[in-house]
Amino acid sequence: MKGVVLAIIAALLWGIAPILDKIALSNGVSIYTVTLVRLIGAVIAILAVSIPINQVDFTGFDLKRILLLLIAGAIAGAIAMIFYYSALRILGASRTVPLTAIYPMFTALFSFLFLGESVSIRLIIGVVLIVIGIVLVSEA
Image (cartoon, rainbow, N blue to C red):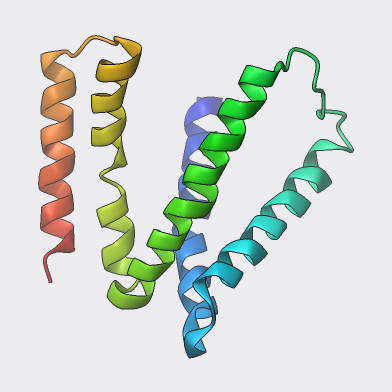
């Protein structure tokens, strides 16, 4: 039950963030600057939460793990955010966010191709339903 509550809180916060993002993008501000400021906000928040409870611990981190996380951060936290903000500016929050929610389809595909994870009929049905849902929500 605790995991479900935590997931719902995360979803709630992720639902609020695009509204703040869209408001921040008004008046033609730079998408790159917006991305940088949002990153700084994330760093401040994680430090404010993790340091007091002594959760910053780099033991077990090797160069490979650090490089993978830096690359993932660059992809998701910078490059994808620039595309996201560009779409948000053009489409608005109510259309952009559902369209970006198609990422589980790509995760399933890449997990199969690069991690050798199995593909079940349930997974395929789930991905198809996600795509159908995205099409239904994004049609305006």
